[in-house]
Length: 198
Image (cartoon, rainbow, N blue to C red; front, side):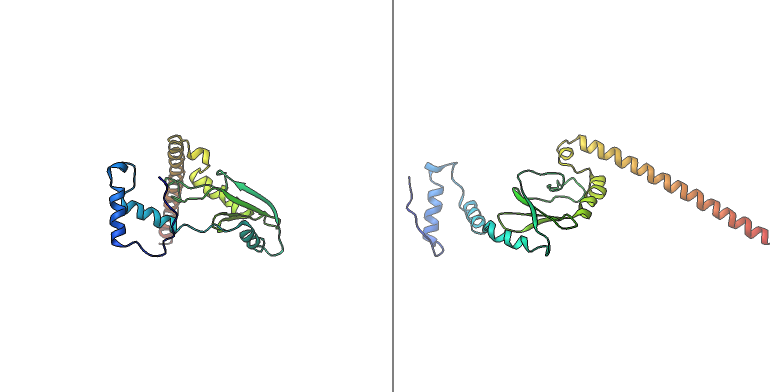
């Protein structure tokens, strides 16, 4: 059955909504059609979806991001890598979605800046430079071992995190014990000095 194309520029009337609801609830569509409230939510989501920005428009804006630098390389990412990845809820910084596909623009500036752009919205989803890439390894990786391959290998990742956490706890306790002993020695020296003066 084909429906004629029609543009609706006004809200549906109560009678039209009742007719739509009875059509969706009809035995002919039993179990296959959406309920009216679900359909309403779906249509609201479609209507509020972001408008796709033409590549020429966001690329022109991106070229002006770093004055004096030009885009040396453009790479489309269709899967996550070690610098651009979603964060699962069980990792240190919690759930963080990252859209795919995206464009990674590499600039020829001294900091080797890369800007990742969502082509659907033209929004910047990530900016990295040499310092942020170093931070990715020295902080994010060492605190949560968040390589996509490791995060996908649960419960192996959980066991590894538990072992490293226990090792960190052991190292911390060693520091506490050494600190307490040092303070005890200092306290004993102060007491001996005070007794000697008496």
